[in-house]
Image (cartoon, rainbow, N blue to C red; front, top):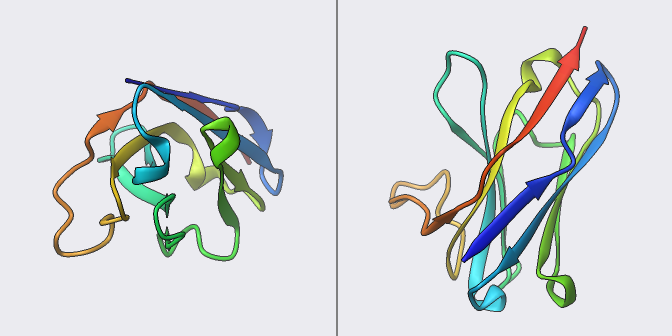
Length: 125
């Protein structure tokens, strides 16, 4: 199993980035893919998620209206388009997979099945 996040970088506040998460080694169609971030000195938090099984979506409050998650099943890749970036969006962004649907942000969230290495996003003010 492999999840490879890419697309991070340094961007000015107000700018945009698109992160990619390329997956392999499991049945992509049966899984939900989530994006998490960890800012310096803070706990990791869920940012967004998409289920390849039923198309359901999740966005954290901080991401709503600015971030868009999408999935290309033919390429086994999930994207996170981030617009209007703020310095508080700075952190290491990870993608992760869980079976079927997104449980991030729900009371029954019990962790992800697979994790990838992160990609660093730095937003300068």
